[in-house]
Length: 213
Image 1 (cartoon, helix red, strand yellow):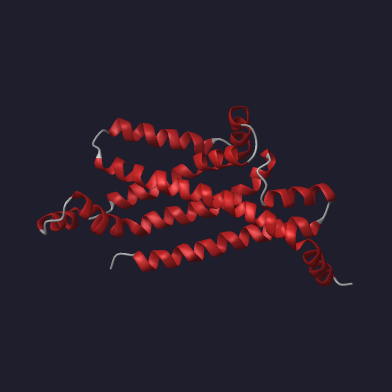
Image 2 (cartoon, helix red, strand yellow):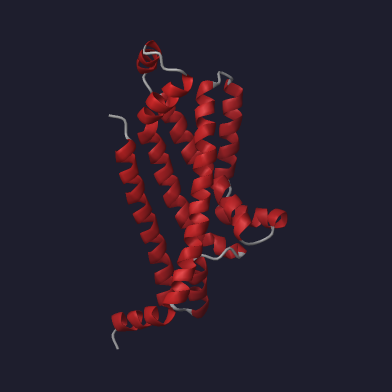
């Protein structure tokens, strides 16, 4: 039997568990990405509106600290606090996701030409109208760049969540290492890559739809 036929046989026998690992992986990663966007984008917008530079420095430094902790170490740190499983994995990965999205959104908001904002004021736009109809659409390429980079990182790092019992494709990879099973290792890795690429394509389409023109 050829290698390809053996791999097809592996899929036909274990597709149910493979899809289950994939589902767990997507639930963890998408939860982290959603929480990250909902928390970080408003925070970055707020930072562009306040004049207190020390506050901005403190926020960036906190995000920097989380980013510098090795992924495995951060996962280990949350175990005494939150135990093992889904919640600590989401918390640890969420802390990791803060910096790239925060920096990109902040840079995007600061890149908006002040003359555009003044023109919006002259047209009678209020604060929230300027934010949602002018500033965020202009800053969208930066914001989406941060979301896309963060999403790819999170989908990759989610494989490590298996180390603290959260499941996902990392479980498949770890089982493959334990059994010395190349098919399991390859499948877990390949599916994580496919999820990341497809999500990046979808986010790129969304960016084109909502981009300021």
